[in-house]
Length: 145
Image (cartoon, rainbow, N blue to C red; front, side):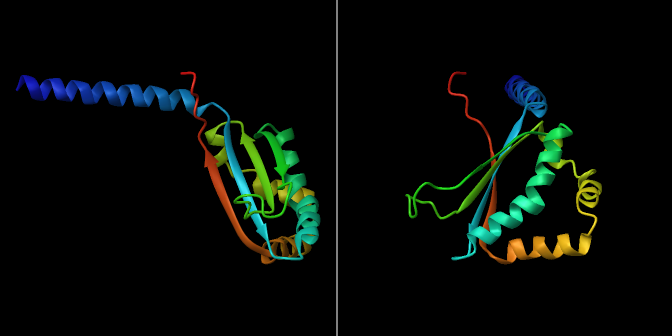
């Protein structure tokens, strides 16, 4: 009986510690890496469509405080290690709630792009010329703790 109570107490303490750690991290910035692999010969078109239709939305999300930062990258050299991607967007959100918040998305896109038919057609094209796209939520590992 004492052993069961002791084990139960350990489990409850562990759950409390995990809940406190989770609550603490909920309001911290959260980063996600978005990788794009573009079909051969279409990178310039992809980049032009990204800059025209997606980047302004991301900048507007920074301006309204949902995003902390948006950074874009491409590999320096072709065939560099496991560089099976052509374009990388690293977005740092205000917090985890901002990652999940989609409330202003449609209104923002409608405001920035009144010609929705054209916008949707160009966004469809941007994804048609991709070979692959994947999102990688990143959890920072603080080695000093």
